[in-house]
Image (cartoon, rainbow, N blue to C red; front, side, top):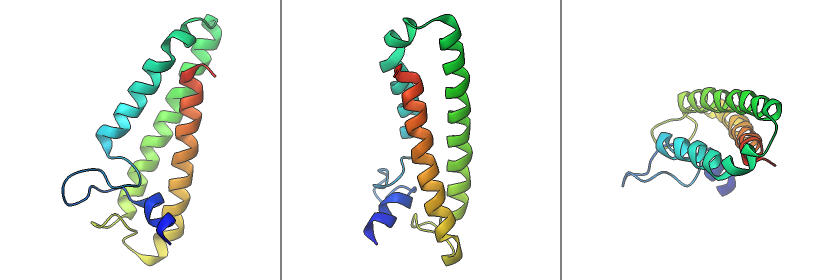
Length: 112
């Protein structure tokens, strides 16, 4: 369905803009930096131990996201859809896992 297309699209559209699904590498980097920047003040008010713990967990979530994005890109064709029909389920699973990792990262760096 159309939800699946949006959830798994990763490549840029012909005009060079990110597809409606997952963002391109620059957009991913912007998400990471902007999320950290927005939560900086709240994080600064936490104890040293809590900040260190959150930093380690956020770095792990970031590393997982990067690996999953790389895996996902390897499964997609030029059109941003699974290159092989048999990869569709794996692509959808990766998209869900990426979304969960992004939410985890956001919670860690926002001070929530």
